[in-house]
Length: 260
Image 1: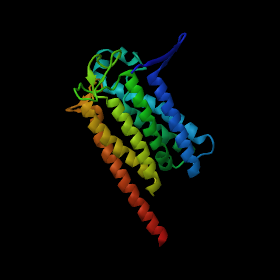
Image 2: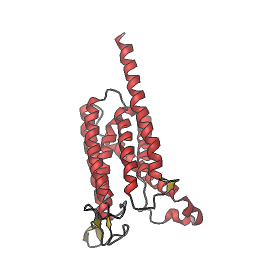
Image 3: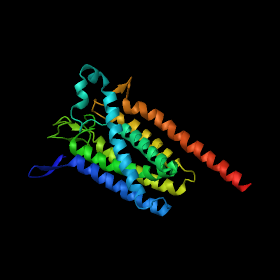
Image 4: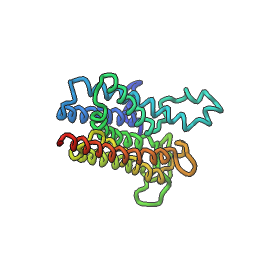
């Protein structure tokens, strides 16, 4: 649990940044491999799509974080420009990445739903590595616990040190890797474009809603009795269900019309 992994002169390798980088590379490689199998890649298309999604994801994650901190920003607008490298909300990254991907497909006149399905398993993979980075940095930590799974930080700038905490980062990472494998399995079973992406929203939303009950960091904001992420999870969960059902029905109607 050490964020500063290696220092060479003035250059320091941070665990959080390293895991994010590994996650992005893993996401790109898996998406490119699957794109070639599906005939969706021309050598540069997936790479450009990933770059668009990464940029959109970073901006979206930061924007949603700033929205959750609107009271502090209204009191001191300079908060917007402080520590840009800190403070991101995953849901903002998901929405920002999806919007950027949609714009990319729109500009190049590509079938968005096919690329949506292509990218979302890779997003789950990247999130798995990203949560390991959270663990190394000590952010996104869990509530205090007396159970045997408790993890104690001793030199974290984010988590309370010297207190056994639920390792929500590692639990989330394990769920993300499981999510990745499940989506790859469903990608072989789903017939309608967009259903894999819909299942991503369903599974991620359900897992995130439950896991939020065990989070101990309070900086994420809240909506009533729910955290911001739990509140959003309700809508994304049902949006995912609607996507899976409606796109499946549309595919079935199209197949029936073609048979006639």
